Amino acid sequence: MESVSRDGGRSSGAREAIVVDEAKVRGHLDEVVRSTVEATLNQLLDEEADRIAGAETYERSSERKDTRAGSYQRNLQTKAGEVELRVPRLRKLPLETAIIERYKRRESSIEEALIEMYLAGVSMRRVEDITEALRGTRVSASAVSGMAQKVYGQIEQWRNRTIMGAHAYVYLDGIGMKRSWGGKVKTVAVLIAIGVDREGYREVLGVAEGTKEDAESWRSFLRHLKERGLKGVRLFITDKCLGLVEALAEFYPQAAWQRCVVHWYRNVMTATPTTKVREVVAMLKAIHAQEDRREAEIKAAAVAEKLEAMRLGRAAQIVREGAGETLSYMDFPREHRRCIKTNSPLERLNREVRRRTRVVGAFPDGQSALMLVAARLRHVAGTKWGTRRYLDMSRLREQAMETHMEPTTTAA
Image (cartoon, rainbow, N blue to C red; front, side, top):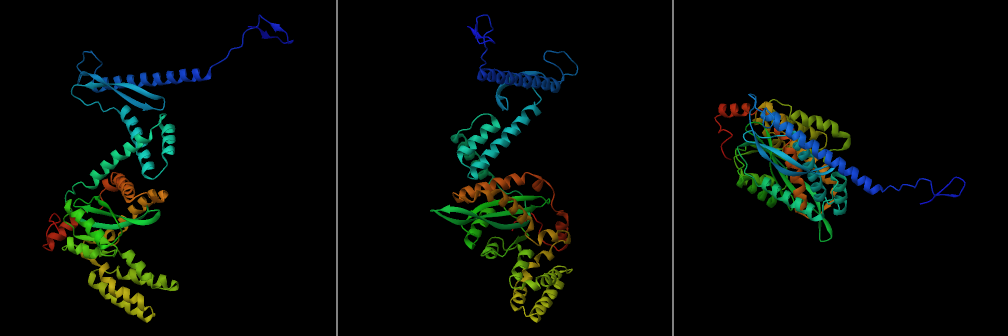
C-alpha cells in the first residue's frame, strides 16, 4: 500500500498506517485481568488450605492437622468479571476462608440493596442499571422479582417465628404509611412490638399490618403475639391509642399498663397557651420527679389545682384524668424507670423505619409497606441494638421475690 510523502507525492516505500481495534484490545485486557484475578484467588485458597491443614499437599510433616479431600467448583462475581474458583476441601477441619466470605458479604449487600430498591418502588430499569454498575453484569427483572419473593418468604418466617422466653417489658406502637388504593392515597398502619427479655436484651417481637390503629387491629395483633408465645409480660408501655388499652386487658389482664409520659405531656400542651408552655411543662415534670407513686399522685392533684388557678381548666382536667395512667412505672425497680416511663425506645426505632420508607411516598399495597418495614426491623435487630444488654433484669427478679410476686417466666 502506498502512503503520502511530505511533499504530497506517493511513496510506495513508506511504512503502512496501523489501525488498532480498540474493542478487541479492551476485551483482551479484560480477559487478562479476569484470568489473573482467578489464578490469584485460587492460589490464595490453596495457601489458606495449607495453613489450616498445617502442611502443603503431599508434604510429610509432624505439624500436619488435616489432609485434603479434593475440591469443589464455585463461580464468584468480582469487579473483573465472573471467575471460577476451586475451593479446597479438608477431611476434618472446616475451611472458613476470609477470601470467599469477603466477596460473599459484598454480593449479599448488593442483593439486599437491590431488593430494598425493588420494595421501595424504584423502577425496574433503574434497578437493572445500578446492578450492572455494581456487579458488571445485568440482573433481569424476573431475577430481581425472584430475589424479592425469596426474601418475602424469609421475612414471613421471621415475622411468625416462635417467641422464646419471657418478656417483662413490652412496647407497642404503630406507624402510618401511605398506600395507593383504587387511584387514591390512603393510610395503612403497621403495628410494631418490641420487648425486653429476662436477660435484659431487646427484641423485635412482632410487626403486622393493621387497617388503622383501632381496637380490632390491636386485638388481632395481640392475638398474633400471644399465639406465637409472648408471655411473662409485667408492663406494657404505649400511647393511649384507640382501643389498645381495652385489648390489653382482654389478652393480658395481669399485666400493668404504662401510658407514655411524653405523649401525655403533649396532650396537656394542646390545652395550654404558647406563653404558658414552659411553666406548665416544668409543673408536669415535677410530678414524675417524686420518690414514689403516692407522692406523685399528691403532686399531680396540686398541679391540677394550680392549673385551675391559672384559668387552664381543660389542661387541669387532662391532668386529673390521666396522671395516674403515667405512674405505673413507679411500681418497678428504680434502675429501670427511666427506660420504661416512655415509649422512646420504640419511637427511636420508628424514626429509623420512617427514614428508610420516606422516599417511597405511597406504597402500591399494604403488603409492600409491611415487607419493607419488617425487613428494616429484622436488620436493626441484628445490630448492636439487639445484641447489647439494655437493662439489668436481676433487680426485677429480686423485687418479685421480695413482694412474693410470680417470677417473670410465668405466663400472663
